[in-house]
Length: 70
Image (cartoon, rainbow, N blue to C red; front, side):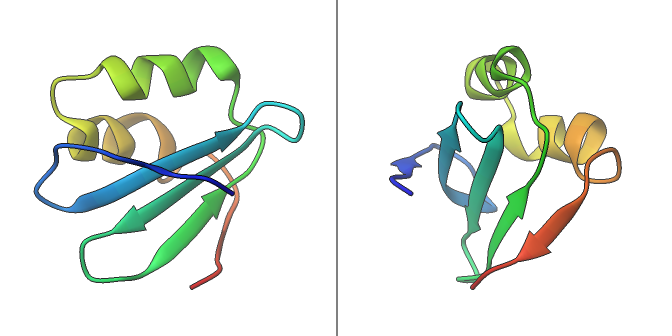
């Protein structure tokens, strides 16, 4: 999955696949997680959020199934 770099203190890059509704997040420590069943609208809100880390923690981290992939 192609990820775009983002301005964040703890997130290095974010990618999204609308077909499978998978959100992929690379953290600055090098770990990569995929979050499942994330709507395109929620992804757009994440990318527009002033604090992507805070948005991820509040709306995605404990609300969607995920898997560490890297």
